[in-house]
Image (tube, rainbow, N blue to C red; front, side):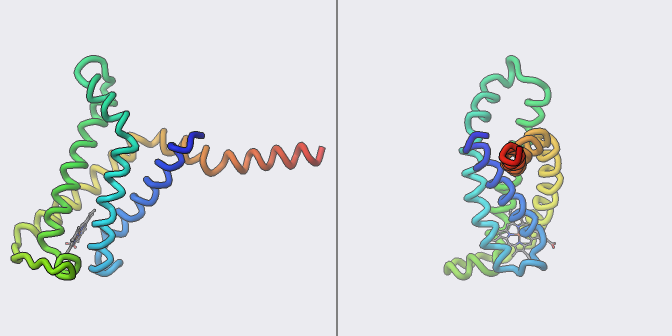
Length: 162
Ligand code: HEM
């Protein structure tokens, strides 16, 4: 198991849990909702940089010899990215905690509030599809990261006992 796959998996699990928390501002409280999602933008940038090679390769091959699966994946990733920008932008425009704390006050506008709701719900749907498309990688990497050590220890202690 390469270190980079382990880093990717751990970062992805953290990002996903943070995403679930941000999806329920009533549960977390508004201040946590806003600061956590601003931090989430940073982890998403790292996620993109760690997967940059895949992005460049698929972009190059997209119209030549990419599989249909890779093409669907690619379009989904872009939709998720654009939707993420809409969520962040609208979130900042309706911010009641983070922006005022930074001394920025923005005029209230109902359209931004609706955009925030719609883009957040859309993200849930696209994120579900995104996870489904990467399910094999998630399960395989998860098993390698969390269970290969256990297996090694079991076979080592079995050998020591023999
Ligand atoms: C990953 C990013 C984000 C996600 C998934 C997300 C998701 C949501 C959801 C699901 C709601 C509840 C909508 C409803 O109950 O009708 C909400 C409300 C809200 N969000 Fe976000 N949001 C994100 C980022 C942000 C950011 C960056 C800010 C501001 C800096 C922000 C500020 C707000 C505010 C002020 C509300 C209204 C809360 C209320 O009126 O009760 N959000 N967000």
